[in-house]
Image 1 (tube, protein in one colour):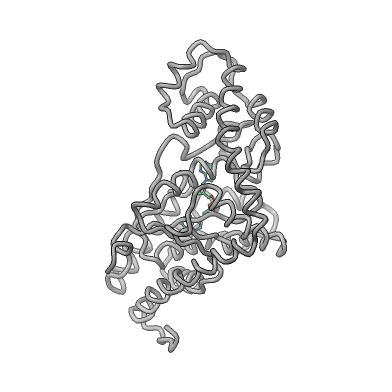
Image 2: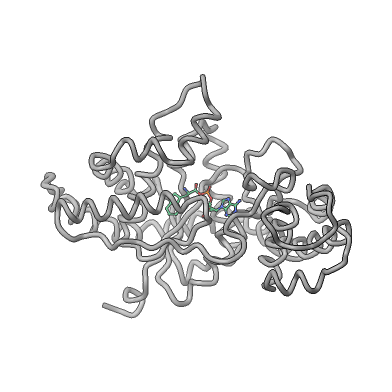
Length: 338
Ligand code: TYM
């Protein structure tokens, strides 16, 4: 086994729906770039998760390639890591089916994200894919014998289910899967909406001032921070009673690398207006080079396709090996091709 294979295996991904935002960057992408040297990284684009809500086919295909551009613009390096698209590796859906047969229905129905999303669609059509979403996520992770899964706080419960399913499978069929650990670190594991700091920043927020997108220009970023909701006080202090200010401190900590206590000291006595401008300026400096790289990369779709083609070959080889073991243990027919 070479050095590359002995390093901990890291796997993670995001959904290619339009608009990668500051929460995705500070909660996920920023830290992914930093672990590429010490770990064996697989970064994928979760296009099959994206279709749990209706998608325009042309838009989705464009978003997949834009997502590759965003990965590279945020510092992922295809020479160090494998970048691929989920739907190109059939093993994700196949393993998800096998895991769904041992997944407790009650546990899936209790998943916070399922409850949130399905209650938002109350009275409308709710596809079973929304319920099975975390099982597909478990398959994504287990198919590559992953050790570490860097994600934001909102994915913690899905990781718990993944661990439960891995343990259950190993218990029934014999030891196969590593039990993966979530990697949820830093002050930005839950970046909140700028307009409603008690709910998380999200691409689907109807209030256009709530979310900073990596494609936002400097003026848009400044405008959104200037109108960020705070509170009626004046003190710049992280506290559960001051969710707006706490969110701004977390964001500033995420982009500057400074601790919350250092930031509290440095900005003591400053009015909220001035503080919001300082946070905006720091975010602008962080986002600008990403946005510029993103714009350049998006022009070279041939290059972006070549990256995922290389990633696909590596992912396919690894997935085939795991899936062959799964078939053996479960007693499914062996395939001549794997
Ligand atoms: P997605 O596309 O919703 O989000 C991608 C990553 O961004 C993090 N994130 C946030 N972090 C901090 N603050 C926020 N406001 C915020 N919003 C999003 C998410 O925690 C995530 O790390 N189900 C996953 C994609 C996925 C996956 C996987 C991840 C599918 N299979 C296997 C890891 C392993 C998702 O929808 O992420």
